[in-house]
Structures are given as structure tokens and as C-alpha cells.
Length: 139
Image (cartoon, rainbow, N blue to C red; front, side, top):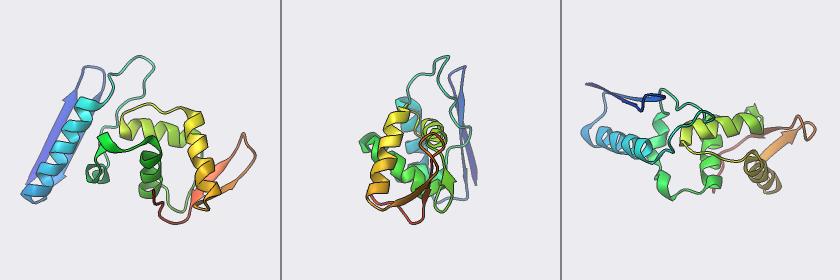
């Protein structure tokens, strides 16, 4: 069975597609998708677009009870293990996936903390710095 759900506010649109899932898993994914849709901030002219397809792993987390640091850690764990990434790219991806804004300075602070804890590598000057997660990040 294939289920497709589309939510649109006239400016942005989000889609969820579920393929061949059991009843419990499908219901859980739909519930999380609706939570995301109703809790995401309203879009403005300056806001980023909502991704058209949300990552499937997103439904595994209770979005209401996660801190920014935890969300950033999860994003890195799920999407960027073993690859170099810039803080600006993480900021944009964070806002698209989690549906909320985060300051670039906050992203940089969390990345610096992860580095101090030995959880990531970094390279480049301050202006061109990149970060690499070589193992799963645990909050």
C-alpha cells in the first residue's frame, strides 16, 4: 500500500510518502508529519522553504522535546557522518528539516563544543571552516 499526504499553506508545501509500512509505523509517521506541519513556524518572505519530502528518520524523534543542540546532533548523525560540511550549510539544512530558525552563531557554538568534546574534526580558517563527523554523535 502506498500513502501520499500533501500539506500546503499557499506558499510552501510538504509531502509525506509511505510505502509498504505496517499499520503502526504508518500511523506513527503520519502523526509526526502532522505534528511537524502544525508546529512549524508560519512562512514569511525571508524564511526558507519546507522540504518537499521529509526524511523518514524524522518520525523517530519527539520534535517538541528536543533542544537545538540535540536537533543539530541528530542532523549530523543522520545526514553527515564521514563528510565535510560547513556551518552555513548545516544552518540551512536544519531550518528545512526541523522547520524552525537557528542562528548561525548557535550552529557555530554547538560545532565548537562538539569539537572540544572530540566528537568531530575540523579544518580550514575561521571563515572557511568545515567539520567532519567520523562517528555517531550522542547527546
